[in-house]
Image 1 (tube, rainbow, N blue to C red):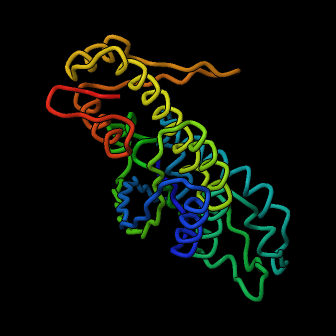
Image 2 (tube, rainbow, N blue to C red):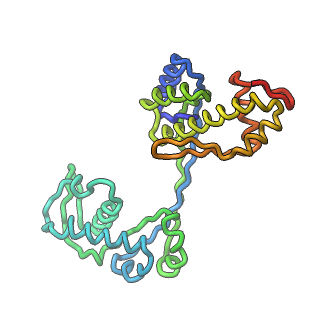
Image 3 (tube, rainbow, N blue to C red):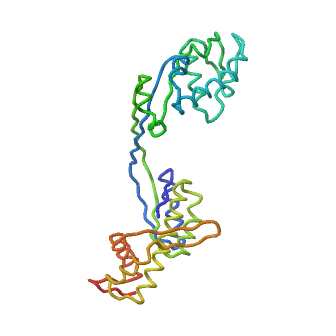
Length: 270
């Protein structure tokens, strides 16, 4: 199981703590490539509104823009100022869309943490640019191509990723590793590592138990496949573990490298 961290220093610190606790681990780093595709539509608000019928993401965004206009712009007098953070708020991309449209129309100026209304254009007159992740509008693409002149924008980002991989399969060691890593790793990688660790320990326990009975590798693998999926019940959830013959072959090699079993030819010793 791998714990992603945000820096090389955290990677080294986490690895040291795991090693002090007697937990086998190895450090690593790589460059992650992420590709995102967006559909862009741009026109006056009123034109977009005319053409948006039955295209739910466009209708919703336009509705949210109207609500924001009524909340943020309509109450302002020309020449009045508003704190930038009050204008933007948190977590709403529509605020940025509205701000950009007003600024492009020459209706706003921004200086020293304040936004000043220079003139008050009607929302319908503003030229706005709407941006949608392609997966959100995939089912509407034909309609959007018919009604708008959409553009597709693709973004490719490269990010250096640091991680520490825990090599253990023992449940107690995995639990100890999770406790140590919680202070270092990203939340997403922690959750992934937790379920990976549970799955690895379940599979390892089952392999070692069956290896006491089945001394031939092909028979052991057949016995494991007949029990797939393995599962463990928690208070509020069940974790299922799926695998195939090739993944079992790799897992047996890993258990051998960790000293839990010995595999030679078609023979297995636990």
